[in-house]
Length: 199
Image (cartoon, rainbow, N blue to C red; front, side, top):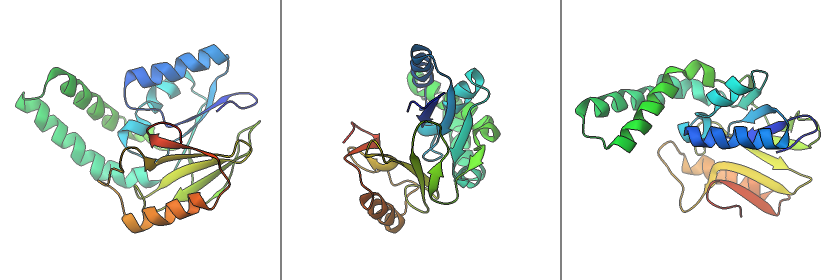
């Protein structure tokens, strides 16, 4: 999203190609990335933070604090499993590269923590845009962030909405339903899902 003096990136992807595309867009627009909003801590949504922060050291990351428990539990377990899979020698080269990337991202886990923890719903300070940030506890993860761009009548939902189907490895169906009801209650005409085309 383009603001008065910078860009806001909602989630930064997993692979180097994702962060490279973000950086190329910033160069083309001639504006720095000044804010990152992470919808949740899954690595396909936060791994690019490291490259964006390296390119724009003043960027502020907004997210829930749910990544703290994930770094001590789910992500740590994933990195341990990844090391075992690499040691087995049974991964094809592409998958092995992905696993090495995930392990490296986990190793830099402290740098994935937000600069600003979102704990309640409210306005998001971003000059030139009127944005409202919302938090859903116990939905796709223990802390999912979604944005409502009231002027554009747009919701940016993260993995609260995905196509073709939700991924329930860290989800809570009851909390997820509550989050979807909250999204349905705001005025929007387009929705950007965590995966899939704009709706």
